[in-house]
Length: 114
Length: 114
Image 1 (cartoon, rainbow over the protein chains, first blue to last red):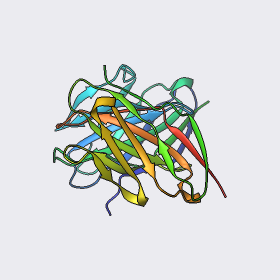
Image 2 (tube, each protein chain N blue to C red):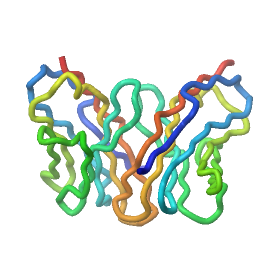
Image 3 (cartoon, one colour):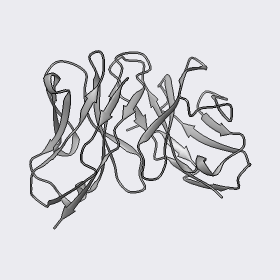
């Protein structure tokens, strides 16, 4: 069964550094998402992306965050200047274009900001 | 505003016992409802979904859930729990159609005693 893949599985970075989290969605999917889960807390929506533009973003997704689909297969989340509170598990998800298609999640990237 | 409440943070059951995980949602229209499972260090795996029709839905791994509009609930059940079911379970609600952003509950951590 096709999967959403995320790399790296774990990233450690220093506060103030830029990080790029990478995702390869399922190949025929058209909707892409980033969610995050701070340790011990619920999974939170960050951003959705469709037709090469952001369709919705949450309050968390401020100017420090950006997303890009640089080619036909990758979907990236960039954090320009990381803060300690950005430490979390970041999940990528994708969805087909059928109205009843569920979201398929990757295994996540654990980001640790020191 | 949309929200999902999972009243039980932790549940412990014995292997072979029945299981019910509670989920209540708040949503202004007909919701799309989901249960996801997260094993330690893993991503979110879809167990089952409800879009319309039969209010009792069957999922993978022997799980089922029942949508009760009058109670705004979507409880997850399994008649006989296996040790491998120990994980965290998330209920989520989404809008119909389109990019279907999901709102997650806080999760219920399930422990299974032998």
